[in-house]
Image 1 (cartoon, rainbow, N blue to C red):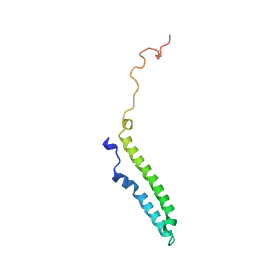
Image 2 (spheres, rainbow, N blue to C red; image 1 turned 120 degrees about the horizontal axis):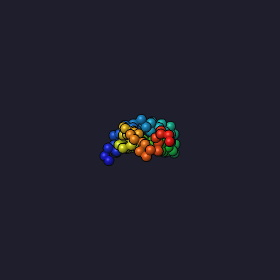
Image 3 (cartoon, one colour; image 1 turned 135 degrees about the vertical axis):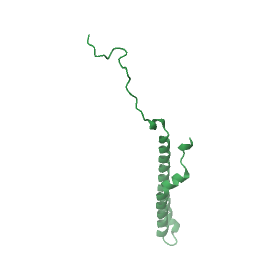
Image 4 (tube, rainbow, N blue to C red; image 1 turned 180 degrees about the vertical axis):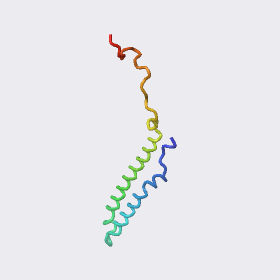
Length: 99
């Protein structure tokens, strides 16, 4: 079960670009706010940027976990396909004999 967990380090690597984008959007919203209206002008764009980041973070965390679980799945490690039976005429119903 331990191998199926997502580590914080893996998630940090997966989200690095998304976090950079979030920081840029927050800085842009703060810098675009007018004097005396910083909260009023920046609150909604910052909240929206965080909502997008939160959604991407959750989706990436789920994706990482699913990939790990699939890697440990018995069905993911199918090397040999089931072959045909050596003798499939045991009841003589499928023989090529004509009566």
